[in-house]
Image (cartoon, rainbow, N blue to C red; front, side):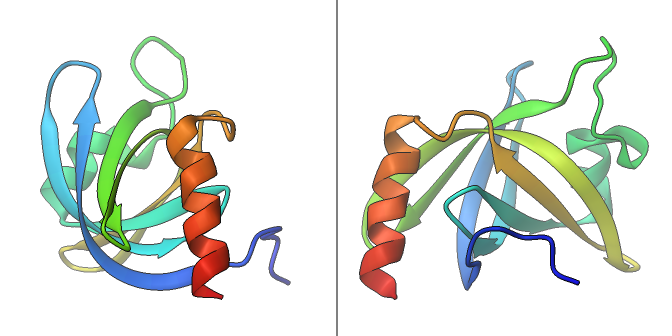
Length: 118
């Protein structure tokens, strides 16, 4: 059973993730919806983004970060919360992220871009 409430669109886009501590990670966006994204990264970056596969940070709060990527020529920067981490292969991880606030300006722009694509 698929629990997703939003249509997900498969993509392959370069992305940058910016953690609150100033760290920057390069990854790939693999799918996108009006509610969140799934990214692909290696084992090392997965440990930086979500240590030990946890979605909760050291202070006991959900892990949040800023995600930047381009879609249809538009640069988007969206605040996200990590919701799952999955190991796909030896050095490939998928991390699911939900948008922290669906009313962020770039989330609303993303919705428009998704409607145009489908």
